[in-house]
Length: 267
Image 1 (cartoon, rainbow, N blue to C red):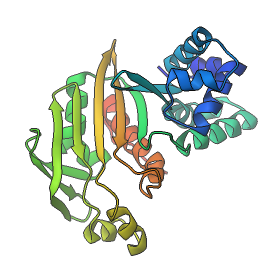
Image 2 (tube, rainbow, N blue to C red):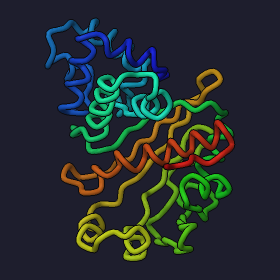
Image 3 (cartoon, one colour):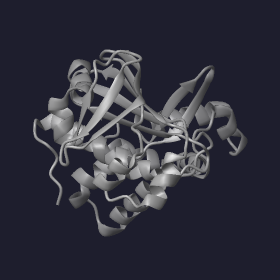
């Protein structure tokens, strides 16, 4: 579950580092694709992937019969934020380099995948991603919707009071405490003004197909596994690279709020 000891133990093996290197070159690979680039048996690759997944360094998403493997930056972020003072400068630099690699990796499948574990319940996590009383604290956004599939969503920016409304902003799936999916907000001039986004970038981003985000919630003992998949992008998307900064920050804020009852503070 991404504990520091598990992460360092997973990284200590050269074969597992080779697997991470392979995913860094091309994310979202199947077991067959990973085996093709390594001098290891399928069984060995499977065992090493299991260790990496247990440490949280690799997360998986099913697409029909295929199981796709993605690098996951969450445990590196946790170590950097919570345990940084315990390690010497060379180790810290290595973690920082790996974190950048995990968040900025190219992808075979054009989507962003991020997994973390939160000490909470599925019911409370569901509230955390749907209830304005929570989202306004860690995200600065309130959603106006009944959370029924097909219903429209209005995004209200708490700081500016601006609303992002569009008929194509809709709820796609809603299975309480298990799964939620909706289309991403409209990249309007109002959105760009609120976040000081230049018009050239906004126009390029707005010309892309509308993306969607999915939250998968799975109980894991006294924790809940949260996997965020943001997909629907073209390979040359200008939006996709920015998600490596945006989603980890949002999910870190959600995790802090649910585990401590207080919003995350930033320096």
